[in-house]
Length: 195
Image 1 (cartoon, rainbow, N blue to C red):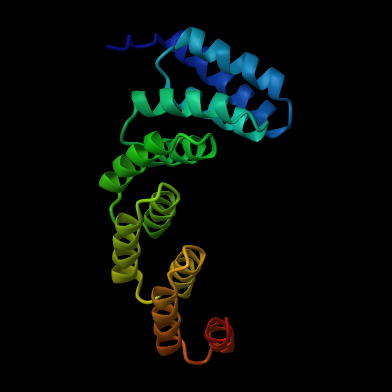
Image 2: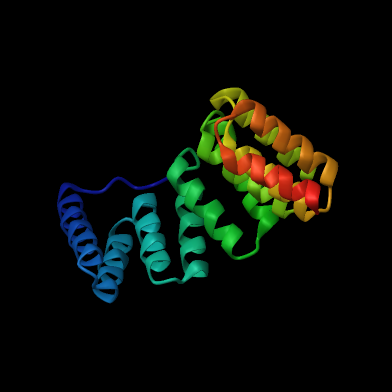
């Protein structure tokens, strides 16, 4: 259980934390990191500090450092959707697809109808080769948002890339039915028939 900070510690922590955030925003990552570490010396269980360090590492393209700190933050506050989202993205970037899938599942349990989370999870499932699960996610997304040309195009490109031309054709026909004023869909269908 975390020990409560004294009033003096809270003041020092708050001042140090604000300075760390200021240095991060001003583009002084080394100074920001030093100040964030001082914050952790005062309060080693502060999830926000771990998350901010993760963002700092992400800003510097240190994806592993970002993932590590996002994971620490999400362990301390497993109900924070931002921690989980950034953790899942970092895991995906690192090719940790099974871990990212579990993180998206946690995120989806917290916020089941967020279109961005559903789309990200579906794309990850496609990348993992879990086509049926991904298609269910896409269907669920469209049950929330209605027909979505971006989702349909993702399905079309996936089917075409897998050489599943009947499915690709069906997706384009559905796109044309849902969006008859989009000439690009007709062109794609003509190209598909020509190929």
